Image (cartoon, rainbow, N blue to C red):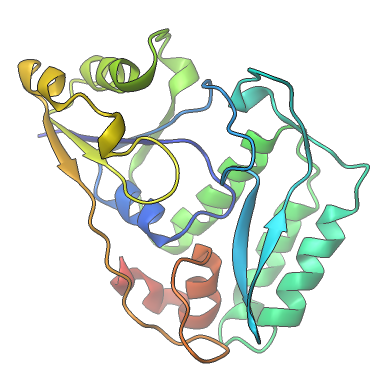
Length: 227
C-alpha cells in the first residue's frame, strides 16, 4: 500500500506537517502552484516569554507567481532579526545549543528563493525527527491540472492507494477535495486529526501550534515520540 501526502513548503512548519510526512510513503511538495500571500510559506510563530511573535520573511512576489519563483528580499535585515529572536527566546532551552549551530548555517546561506530556504529547513528538521519518507517536488511530475484534480493526478501518477490529507493551515484540506473522484480511482482518502500533546516549553502556560523548532529546542531527540 502506498500512502501519498502533499503540501506546499512552509516556513518552519508546525508539528502536524511533519506527522503527515512521517505517515506517508511519498511526500510531495507543491512547489509550482500559485503563491499564497500572507500565508504560511514565508512566516510562522515562535514562543516568547509573554506569548508568541511572528517571524516573517520579506519576499518579492507578483500576482500569480508560482511558489518556486518567489525570491527572498535581502534588502531588509530579516536574517539577523530571526536569528536574534531565536537566541533571545530559546537560548535557555535544553536542546537549543546542540541544534542551533547547524540551523544558523542554513540562515547564513542566502538562498535566492523562498522555496529553497523552506526545503532546507524542513530537511534539517526531518532528519532531527528521524523521518525517512521519500520526498518529491510537484514540478518534477509535469502535471498541469489544478485544485482537487491536481491532487488526484499526483496521486494517480505515484500509484497511490491512500491520499493522506492534512489539517489546519495551508492546502490541501478536506473542503478542497472531491472525495468521490478519488474513490472512483480506487484511492482512499484519509484525513489527519493531529492532537497536540503538552511538552516542555521555556515558558508557561503551554502554547500549541508553534513552529516545530519549539519542540526540537525543548525536547531534542525525545521529539520523535510526539509525532
